[in-house]
Image (cartoon, rainbow, N blue to C red; front, side):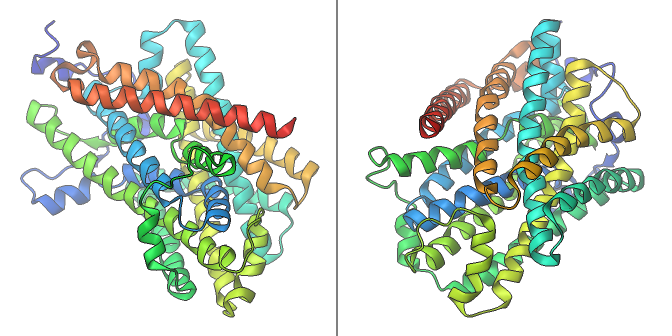
Amino acid sequence: MDPLRPTAYDDAPAMPSLAEVHRTVGIPAGASFWRKLLAFSGPGFLVAVGYMDPGNWATDIAGGSRFAYELIFVLMMSNLMAILLQSLAARLGIVAQRDLAQACRDYYSRRTSVLLWVGCEIAISACDLAEVIGSAIALNLLFHIPLFVGVCLTALDVLAILYLQHKRFRYLEAVVVTLIATIGLCYLAEILWVKPDFLGIARGFLPPPELLTNRDMLYITISILGATVMPHNLYLHSSLVQTRAIDRTREGLKTAIRFNFLDSFLALNFAFLINAAILIMAAATFYRHGMNQVAEIQDAYHTLSPLLGIPFASFLFAIALLCSGQNSTLTGTLAGQIVMEGFLNLRLAPWLRRLITRLVAIVPALITVGLYGERGTAKLIIFSQVVLSLQLSFAVFPLVKFTSDPAKMGEFASPRWLKALAWTTAGIILGLNAYLVVLTLQSWM
């Protein structure tokens, strides 16, 4: 069959991704621009929570406290890369009706698919490790709940997902957007209190001259990149866009691609503002007072209010951290289900699938918290970003390959300019993340 023919768009997969919510969100026909944008909005915000998780917090606080506003440029470039890759993931799901894991299973051998699945599960566990520990730290700071108990409490998100999806998938999206809005409001208040140097912020959007010569700055730079572009978000996004019951004609697909891009663009830029706010808060508070070695999230919490003279500042910091960690564990659980089903074609009861994916993340978190206790969590979170960096290219390179293939994408395959940009981005991520691993190993020796 000619891949450019519109009839190719009707070739649906035998078993859709996230079958229980596949095409359950209706798109109003003949609606206005804003009604359509509202109908398509949601997947981008579910993905965006991964770009403001506790792993990002650790790297943003380190960057702001050590180098003031200079690494805002790195946050901006990382965000642009994320927008590009997430738009490709959405395009794959919309046009090919396959999530990235299913597309890999279709293309690669069984052995390769299993290896990719194992690597992705390790990455999800590493990412969830940071998110679970971040939530546990927030519970400890707010309610003095021991970290070990706090990690166990994060398992309740499995029940939340089951309940919300049973009601309607839009309810789950609404909860996530509400938590994101809470984080944003908390940091809006923080920025107003810290009174940052706005000229310094403006200069931060320019590349710092010593970026490639200052080893410490380069290390933090690559850590920010590793914490920003996450592999499981690509699998997640390519599945979530299929919850929309779109019109599978050429014009319907163009509309879906356009509005999903707007959804991602708005959500990821909001995530960029959150990350920039964390870095700005660290710069305006810790760097300004000569505290250049703030390592633990707990240290930031305990010193924020005394430095600002505002008792409520630390409370808002902890609330935002709790929302960030719990938000990310919700989406991480969904990502675990998607990669298990996609790579292995394994179909289990929804509650059992989610319980397995949650245990895969919580058991390592319980072990590490038992070993390290309350101290050393920052090193543990940064280590999780290193593990993510090892896995990232195994998701990015297949994504760029599949979305450039006319046999899979028909006329919606990436044009030449987009392919060049995507492959360049993939190469930069591979090189920088590989260098991050080298620097990390050297620091441990």
